[in-house]
Picture (cartoon, rainbow, N blue to C red):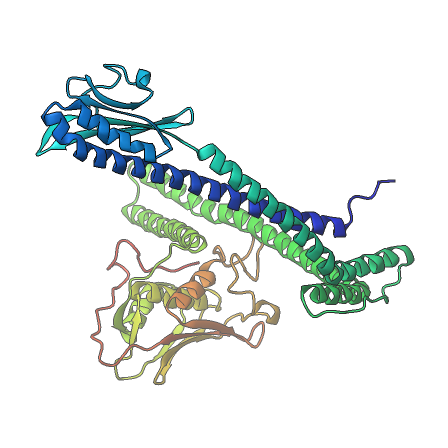
Length: 510
């Protein structure tokens, strides 16, 4: 069993004593450092001042070469017990007068050109100062005195040691008195925690005796015990959430599998749609290669090649638009244009297929210009796509109606047909990528299943909406496009027709 460590009571006492000792030690170091610098500065200043006074008093003696007068001046230093020796040197370095132990001031012991300064070492301080009279250096005075810093610091340290011991004793007494208000509640918390661990009884509580931080600790501990009792319910709720998230993940996986299946169907459909025009193109090329071919037959072959080539171009353009949608690079170039001009461009694009299938097209437009802020080419692409879909999914000889209505904020374009209609379960999926009512390769109507997805995305870029309606299979269908109107004061720009923009041509998605 692991041996118990120090109690919190002893740890707190050690913290208090260590903090007090460290603080006093820092104060002692600061005081000793300050006293050392102050004592040095005071000693140097006093000796320099003394040297200056003696130098001025001895200047006449140097001028008149009177060593006796200089010695008399230096003899006054007997009133300064700290000064052990003094000497005056001439500018040539000759000892002129001395005081104290003369053997320490032999000739040449100090340079005559030495600048004012001082040196400290071996318990002594030495200062030297030049004697200057009217700008001329007459000599140098030299003072040697005892430096009693060590003794002074010993006195300071003795005082600081007494203060340190007294402070530690006071801190020990205060710590013992204060610990009862701090450690006892903590020890009570520890005792209850031990009982909870041993007895598994979470109804136990610690009695609160103070409102300070220790009281907050007691409240927190009691709240924790209450929380533990609620954790079982929280765990059950978490398990329920986990089960629901697992079900949602399964649904997401199912949706991903459906998406992958649609992608595979789309790739098979794409290969089929790209292959279909190749056989007619190969046949037409063979006809054109033969010599003496009938001109009418050659003309029909060229027309067939143009139709199949346009079909290939439309497929590739749809794939490029799908790529722009998935990468977020499909952008608009908007201008204020009359909606009637955009519709006329869309009808011109879809007219060949409508005429080929012998449909009747009814158009109901308002007489006044209806301005919209749109990319005319892209908006014409959407409407021509809807017209072509109506023509393609309506039996020959059917009827298609295009109706435009508007209010103060938006314009509504409705394209209705009496074709095959849309099954109820497909109404919400017709705008999904690659979605088609008939996904088999033998279906009657071609196309990649991306036209309505492109139409919806383009309308959303115009801040509008598109919706599909149908009463069911065989009941026809209706697509309604809503787009915001432009301000009435805006100047309309001409709406480009299918061949007006080589970069983004208006075309029919199949």
